[in-house]
Length: 494
Image (tube, rainbow, N blue to C red; front, side, top):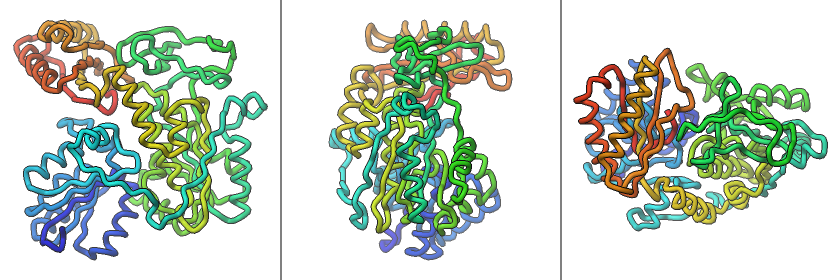
């Protein structure tokens, strides 16, 4: 594309990937590469836009905002790790970078490449339907063997008297790795966490009887579904096995770091999370130190498992794989599979083979079994069966109506009226209306929040109902002091 005198946009899901990606592109394209991200000051962003205007930039690298780089002769948009939810804007205007990139490419007659080792279910379904061309890479770039993956049942660890977050198998492999002077990564799977309640003895998870998502733990001993509003009291003991070991999971990266330093005092440990990367160059400093082998162990959340290439890493430990599996979101299984597969892919990227430990209380769940086997197509088949059964995207279309207001009673009443109106303007059986319910956080800065979900097989049906609802809101004064937004196929509960 560059040789043809055109420009390209390279989207990355995380600022943490900027350093590694930019170094690769600078090596190939020199100083005609630029970056955009939220860590740049307004002046720095203005400077990069001025370089684009003067025609000094061929390749722009950055997260979703880089998609709007004003190139005059755009030829290519590449979306790396296209499955990542960070490509969806949760602020107005709500847009998904993937769909927006495709539309911009259509307007400007450019091409789009969606790259991922674990494609989103939506993108893979487009390939299955023939609207996208699928190109497959069957081997790693330099043909390294895939890592050996071991699944550890943490219920058995508890039975054997081990109450630590580190299983005996992982501890053993960590000792071996340190003795051989190799590097390792410990990934604490915190994405999708909303206070779900599970039993450490049998793996039982408290789910909503109406929505097939987990109930979330709230203050005051309440368990709430963020889709339909179902509520019940906190339970003890476990209703499945009678164990007292039932409750929420509270371990964080700092506690893991303290535990590892105490267990392996000789190890050099780095921690990468929101606290350690707050400063402008936080990501770069930690990642470059680990890449230069200045540390033996890197501990972090999902930001450490996305596309990083550390040849010295031979061991990856995935702690609490269930944390994203039982989030209050119908995409929980998909996100878990993607995170575990991506995390496993960090091991054995150099000359030495890699090993991966997946610690879980649900070793029989298809997301975890397929991730351990690196079997995407097997996972896709199971996941689409679930989406078909429950009527979730891409099998059906989903629209969220997000409502906020300062008066809780008025907001609740307005939400009920809006729900009844949505039912009235939809044909019989055409739309399923769920809610209104409180989202994961029901009040922020004294502003209350409600959400209504509408499901339909046809996208245009939801668009038509949205248009009716907007007119209804406009002519009714009861909605005057409320903010109401519409979001199609939302990635998160707001």
